Image 1 (cartoon, one colour):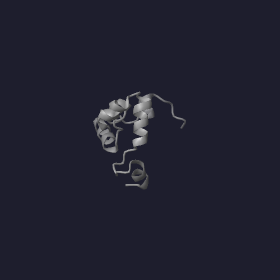
Image 2 (image 1 turned 180 degrees about the vertical axis):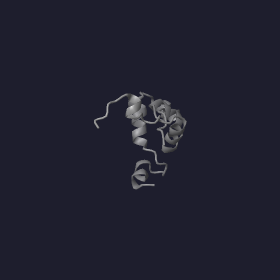
Image 3 (image 1 turned 60 degrees about the horizontal axis):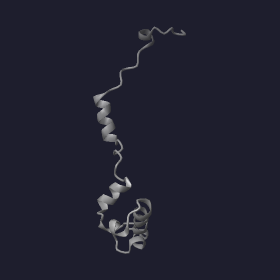
Length: 85
């Protein structure tokens, strides 16, 4: 745990309580009672966190490349291109 995390929440949870409270009360316009009744998962959902797709990693890219290989590049003879030679 970083010193910043300890200083932020005082309890070692790693949560930035001031920012979360500000987001809930100001950003989402919740009452304090509504804010404190939320679970962390509900608050994250309301704030739009964890909603995006997981970025494609190297293993996923390798699987796609195996499933859909690029075709071999055509030779000038196949394309009908005229050679400079």
